[in-house]
Length: 265
Image (cartoon, rainbow, N blue to C red; front, side, top):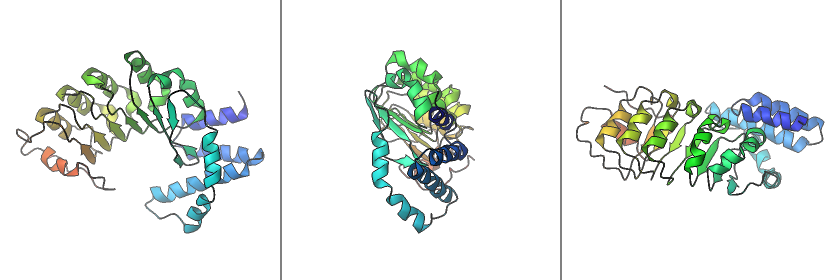
């Protein structure tokens, strides 16, 4: 394995840690790629300001804009895999999102994701049954913060399997709209101790009723959730009067930074 490959693998293995990226930036400086090194450091500094609730210095933002042409070039150099589209956005020096036409592409090319790109966000357009179990065991899943299965028709059993998988423990967004789900899926999500980092849950256009809504509302594990998108479900509010769900519904279709879910009383 080359030094570059080893450094990239270290970044992919710890996508939330700045240190491997900074080590890679030093290596780039030493190996004739100072522009890429500067860009990585610059992006990390901007992200640190944002994480602290601060506006990044104007000179940082201006300098980042000067890298637009280079970023386009680096994006074009990403691995070309069938059925995969890389997101345009770079974060902390690297692309963070990808869309796959078929989840099997992630399983089949797991090594490419594992060692080349610190992927944080994944959207799948279809999920073959044969790929599901392997994906749940893939190291790619354990590094994601955003996972979107909108329209994949997963069904209750697959969602229950996902909820029981330790690999979802870093997710802050989970998209399950239009997946043929009923209350069983909602109960499985509510019971998952691995979803404690979740902030946004999209369950739109399923068949979840008040019973599933109540399970989600009183879950001791979903304390960080600030937004639940539930349009298109037969949730009436009957039977959950006095439960936090009715107040929690105020968060639906709102994404207000820093807002907290009301405590259950």
